[in-house]
Image 1: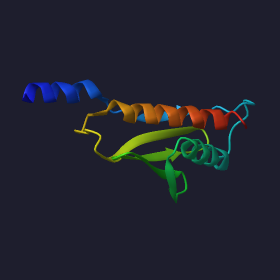
Image 2: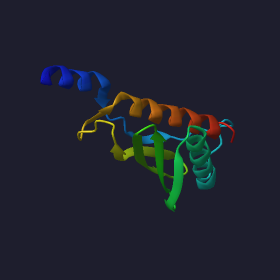
Image 3: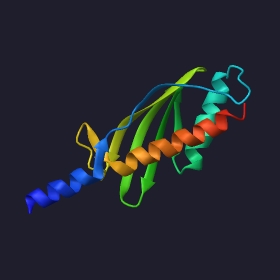
Length: 121
């Protein structure tokens, strides 16, 4: 039975998806401002259900709650790039290297929305 449980958890986990120094691309090709990147991150994250709080210039913490699960990420950024890194979670099978596969989907959905919002500039 232990083997089955371990296998079940293994099948539901993937390596944690951290995004480091993703290039900011605007729709016009002109450089973005720090405020535009901030706004695109806040709007993109909230559009996907994340709660965001500013932690200072170039730093946002975002949390999402889905049923009994919670994920929290650090988002750092400047006018040319942004990073999204795992910070904390509950009930997502995190063990230091892997996490429930839905976490990675939530991160990718947020990135997609951020990119859409950046293209508006």
